[in-house]
Image (tube, rainbow, N blue to C red; front, side, top):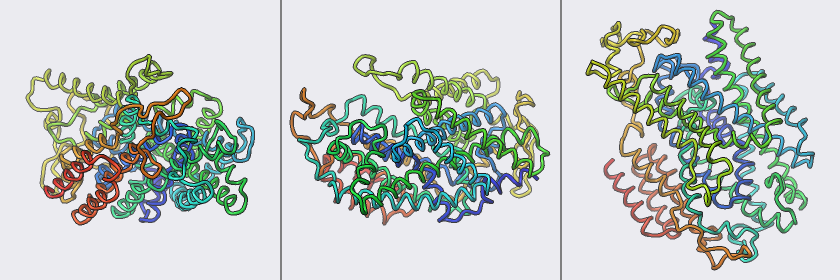
Length: 628
């Protein structure tokens, strides 16, 4: 049947072992944004590019907190599409296709960004016309071929190879730069071209830093990562993949910040100013040295393309999966497996064609879309968190969630294009992350609609309890009564998804919690969320703004506080993000590891940040350990 051919092509038969799961997750997550974008941002913004490390830690938190439930439910309920959980849990066509929209639109933007990264990187390295499009079209055709040949299994195998190349690059490249040009500790602050990098961030930059840290929390809901969550052969394989993704930022994004900030001095010494792609210009400087640096530069260029291509092919097959399963298959439910596969390939071709067209023709508008990409994904956060963790009394009606998501979507667009575009904090007032503000509006709208709906009801029961008056079903496996797969009261028939593979029993909050009995989860503990929120505040550089001040000639008025060439406020970011990362591993290895974490934290980090901050943080961690 067609529904059986979908998991074979799009989920690799759910057969990915630990190594393949880790390789494909690593290569898909650490994309062209990482290899090319982080060094470019560090070249222009300095140590503020460390925001990518803190944000990646929050991404890991989202994976760590939701993957076990999503995978378990996918096995119990036969979920095959990235939207199946929402369709099964809420049984609403309106919310189902709201989720489809909010998964496809950001993914198309993400895929477009990869096409742009391929074009700029390739043209910069080979010193081609920046507007040349021949290379990006050729590479996209190769990516399309991978997807045609073997579905997710082929994509995952190529991801694993590309991930290995990326790891080697991030190990070798900083060593070569350090040997030939020196590292952070070797920079002369008096002659460094961008002394403003050592200033403490402004109040607006600190606020936006924290917003950026949390805006990527819903990364787990992107379809290409939900595919990998479902494709893992076992929970152990999935945990191994998350371990690799959690450690990955320290190898990739910290290295990217090093390359970009040291690259400022490298390019200044080479007489290169404001290159269109600083990363490509840095590799060009290394090539000019000849010998082993030349080889490493070529290898790094290969790694950058590998990173971009791995994410692009992952996004492509994910987009094809969602559109085929949620649009094409419902229209032709009796299509043969071969015809479904052909439909999927047509969708893949159209998707990459749209992304290429936007990349080539979009120009400056592309940066605006990229700025709100993850903010749009964040609008699905209430849907997933309520679907996964709500109890019977706190469950919400799907139309309330759909209304909140769409108003959050509109708010994100309106704030970005109406307020933040061309924003000047000295004139326009306080800055906002449009995605975070959109999510806040989203949550408020859901709360208000639910409150009005419940207060207006004559019954005292909650919306979830209204299901009890529908036809009931006795499950012989546990002799308990469950709601059947019937519409909610007052729910029109057209809003009810016609999907039989989920079973005859409705996926209620009680059934979700029942499926996870005996599994210890971090998000099931209320204190864990509080701890993570506190740590997201601590990783933000909460310091006096613009210190030391700059003289008129761009030099610092006095020497900044520096630890081995790194500003003390940046070292604080690194220290607290490391603490957050280690807490993730605590969730896996418990007490002995935590005690070791605290000792290492005091030994290596406390010396570089104020004791008034470091000691209470460590004590708080110990108290939590003892309590737990």
